[in-house]
Image (cartoon, rainbow, N blue to C red; front, side):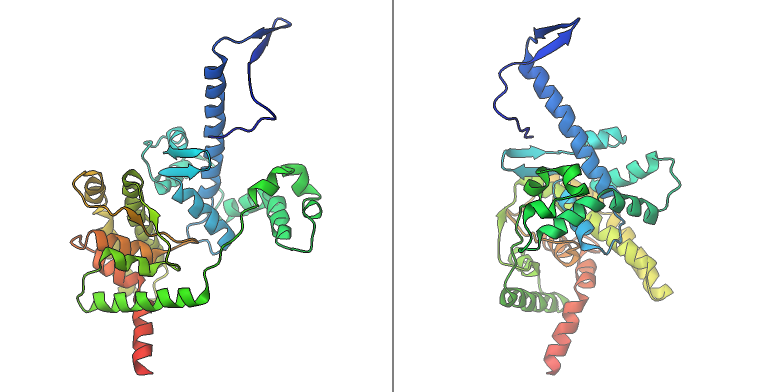
Length: 327
């Protein structure tokens, strides 16, 4: 949590009966106010993300939702690290504080009596942020002064704060590194198809770069279960779009098999004797189901459906391997 003041707070006064009186124990009261404010901010951030359609194809909104999901269990910023930053938002919706983002999303949508469709809710969300998005897009023009980019509604709504929020620069991975990672992933998938074990070091082949970060155990436990939730949701979505009845049946069956493993996987993650790696394989952007499936299969190759899920989300790499062998 981080509140910004023009200076340092040295006291708080309350106005009662026309008189300003110094508030006793003001630090505690001020901190409680900050916590309440931050909980409200986090609720709106999560609620906006919940309005993004599951099968959304707009990168800007997919990235926003993914950012919320990545921070769901643990958030680390310049001012420190916070666990369960959205627990109060879950509580408001009647969920357990350990609820996943998807559980929160479903609970939130059940609370409303609105008859709006998913498409209508998304349209309303985009309209709400239209001015800000236009201003951000203008900021990408290097020849346009920032003040010109922020004129009009965007500046009126967000002021100079927007500059700070949008000041992050995108770091692109060189194409040769991406190609090298892709080729390595193809070999790994081919090996698994032929019966090889998916070692943890091989999971990093499904990233677009070669970076590694530390994976705190409490953070890893939540993200591993979330990875399972994500792949189940994606398989269910693809089942609805299946080309034929046979494919649809197979995907529905697979999703049910995976969903049945959630409780045991969560128990395994919480077991202090479980061997969870300390290196974290993450990548920017949305989706990443090939990587998530690799994480699950490498950690628990004995779990029903994990190998099949890994090969399903990496079938395109097997096609790449087949094309390469013909050349």
